[in-house]
Image (tube, chains in turn brown, purple):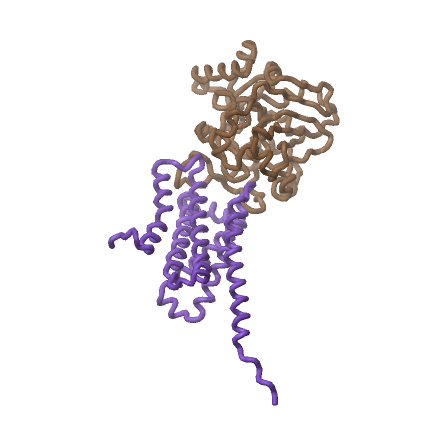
Length: 307
Length: 208
């Protein structure tokens, strides 16, 4: 599937050679064939950027400011703690309400996918945001391969369980492990929803959810589950880790919405990381600015109730 | 004034300024991580709370050790708590929100954890304003009553801390326990004194 940007590509937006080389590296690192390579370097400017061009946050901040509770509650600590986490080889299972269940090595999964760059705003439920140039592929095109049955209404994602290397899976019961998340099937197959394998032109850093994570740009960051090992298509809505831990605070939908505050704090504004001192917070946009593309998914729904 | 490192009063004053000094150094050397403003909030909030704990610890220490004359230290640390919480509030208004009042208003209205922080700060401000000796004299017996509001300020500060967190509650629980113990000491001491004073009252004379 190809995502069309609303504007034609200007000369200035044509990939610069350095970025191109970086992409070669990432694709090589991921074990993609050379045939996949040429097909996989298309640059995607998500359609929300018609009015404003998103400037990526510095990769230093991206790499050292992560909520990876399996490793640590401290955003700076996961970088070091995740260092020895093995991400290659990586097995991915897709099962449930499908005709063709898949159980493949990640390399083989990627061979059939178009890896592109997606520059998205990433908004955390805690009230901060950054702009990340992800490298990934459409989840819809992967799901398509499994031939979903008409009974597939929801998608459940499960993270890796490895208590030996993920200290909080032993020490903390704030969340139930492994971490799980869920989407409605139409959300999961929306063109903006991607599985990311890289960022900033490189493979995904381990502390950012390598080797495979979900990115759903119109939802709060905790929906974008890291280190995915299993994707299940289900009849009924799955219960996600945060929803289970505090159902009145973290709903199933978790759409970015400035008009629906968290019970304990406002979601009206956000701190854009890297913006510096004495810069006002930016006003949070409905659906994180992706309303044109996704608002129709929630037509006639009371977003206060389905938060 | 000459600094005398053997004088506990001088050392205390220096100690009060040290956290601010280290914070300024970290600001200067860009050492506050990926979300420096959030780090500023946490560091300043932490130190307000720590000085609040120290202030609350003075009375129990006085009772246990029977030292006298620690009231000046209690005042110093109390004012220090006010100082750090004032900077905490100013950073929120100026550094974080650049005095954008419409964003600030919505944020405050929609964030219960900020209400608690605000209550706590308002109490501390009242206590700081009524801290000088002439205010103490003027308020007489009421001074003590007013300054007992610090217990509520501590309670609100702890909830303010708890309510903004998502997962790890270790730190607010630590400070919450500490403050509970300091308040429990007062309660026990109060009961003990009440019982003692009852014993001192002469028995009712036997009726003829």
